[in-house]
Image (cartoon, rainbow, N blue to C red):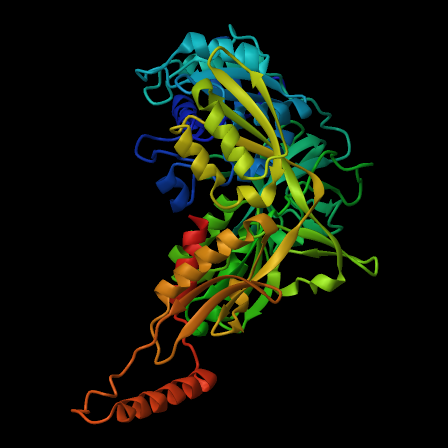
Length: 598
């Protein structure tokens, strides 16, 4: 066990985690030059194209150290985006140490600090690494100062590397062996194995990623899942290398994969503890938290005939992604669809792109919303994330919405615009910490619903890309939320209804009406498009009708002849408006919602 190191790589998004993992794998000979490709541990096309890690992956490497020993290094590459911080939390539970990467040109950013606190919660030993020292803008001394001031780590332990060129990689491997602790555990104790990840293989079922805390796990053992309460027989186990490498057993301290005939990720819980059925452990591994969905949106197929295809596609995605939740939903305008729960806007974006790319389904997605707690006058409390189920305003006693504590790191010159941006998004309190001479941390409490739409994009714009943002949920607070209905020809369109704070209701309603007026084609009669709160109209746009020139055939005579024809046309238009149907094309829904999200 003294020759094993279990560690993960944590950092802010785009600080070079996957590139460093590639260099470590190459330095240990974990992959041949012919098999190698950039972002080796990122399996999905969308991860490789965007240069982000969405799902954490692990690999077992063999490292021959200068002291003459062969060490087993179990490396876990983790996501950097705030939406996937639960993946980071799960990975940290399986590790004894972590490499915390700081970009030499960007310095310490928000998610770096957030991940540091997660690692400290799990009592991990941290080894700082300063990456991208080959860049012209790299400032290693400033990065060391920030590691000391912001992270509270020893700046002289930080190892300067360039993951791109490979400079300093041997120092990182030596640092892992010398500075990170070996795992603890008793291989003779009752089995206790933590399931920290899982993915679905169509031929073998669910492949579990496990860290053996105590005991020994062998093939053909009958195991019991302590949270799920299910029993399975181990069919195969081994190490995660570039390809899976079967072994006869995994002992305490080791990380590997387990195949046990599990049919779906939903049959088990990530974070569950595996133990032997005939010799169970006394208690499961503590500390697991479930992923919480914070953004809710409805997904409809562009073509109603593709509803069954969408059902199968979501089933397949959910088999791999246990954080995605969905239930059946329907709309008068768009037909049948699903109400889905996501970890954040990036998660929503990734799922939408995978549905369109992997399953070739055209989609219409409703405006994202958060979960509100509504207390009714009869004392009942209900959770509402869908405008369709918003109760009658006369029955509502009070409404509360989720708040977050946002941490924004920004250069000093952008503090004014950032504070103004926070105020625009209903920030309640703002405090500033001066991290260094030119870097400031702004801590602000604001509603989660305000962050959903354009906050992150605006922050990047006003700070010229230097601002970084991270948040943690705080609590629910009372608010004045209203349901805004969009009426087309005085008929409400359920898909376009949305929940919003009263102060921002009119601004969004005007935007919706203008977008719809552009997207809906003209008819033979005038079409009013209105935004309404209850019976109060708060915005309006009008689509003017086509008009036939009924007086063209007249060549003279009294004006009453002309008025008679115009009156007849007017009555016909009124009758047509009374019975006429407005055809709203699918692109109208798409244009409104997409413009709203952008």
